Length: 421
Image (tube, rainbow, N blue to C red; front, top):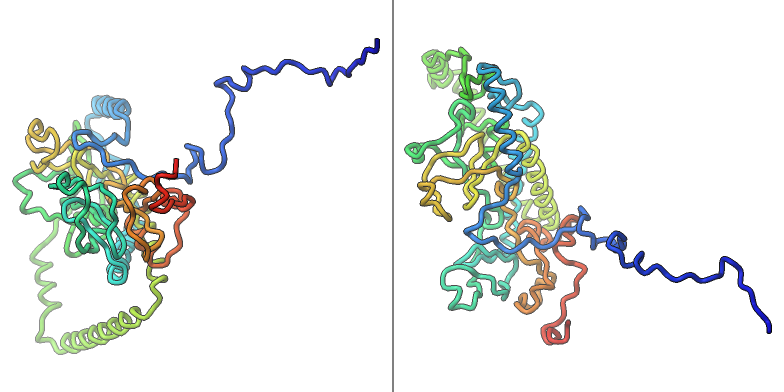
């Protein structure tokens, strides 16, 4: 009887099945499928219920803790000078050039979109806020407007405008953001309302003649939580008026000559601008789309930097936005539970999506093909309206939206829907 002896390293042992199926073991996933991948973005979730409140940016426990610390600091030092801008009324020097970049990027963005809309049509639903970029509206049944049940939630399309692509809510303009940060209900008709992104740029350092604001040179004081300004800056209105009248006196010959030259230069500049605009119409549409998309990302990134220092508030139930340290007291909220608040807004910290709504639209791969089908909507991707408009005009797809647009998903044909699991 022959006995074959195997080496010790070849002896088989019973596999430890608990090691493979234990909850502690992690199985590596292929790139792009991890949930914590920063480059992965899924399509946005459906619109929340109107009765639900927006999620808080800062947890409530942190807000309560911060309020308690501020209360204790007030008790220890009732009268103190605020040192950190912009809470003390001064500007943040590092954010002044950023504010000018954001304002200029917004102007370039609106100018570029107005040119692209003439070539690539924008469709807007008559009964809801749905938007579509393309010659023919999609057939996806997501309408929630009046009478949507009678139409089986189908959209009724009409021609869209530039402000439908980039929607920015309006905010009350504050002349003194520290001395008088709130607008009461009686002042709602007297205080102008401007786009919130423009108001944010003004408070961060942009000076506009149409919307003047107060600029301080000395910080303010806080006395038991109330802002007090001890700055003694007296302005002589009569001297300014006299100087203004002297500069505008039409009887002085030298002034007439200079004004004539300025007017002639203005006419020449205007004619050259018109010639440049005519030449721009001949330029490539792709270059315009690339510049428009760059201005969009520049505006968004700059606004995020400014919002880290300057406060922006939004209502927890409606899209109202107020730029400043406090929300206004105008009774204009018509959202859920507004009767309990007497029409006042439920203010909370805002995000960049509240300041500049991205307005997500369905991505169209073939602009000359059939409209998007309702049965295939789970295979379609989405993108912000500005990105979708620029991509259809020839701009490259940005990397941060490739996963959201689902470019790696091949949708089946309409007659193959039943064959797909």
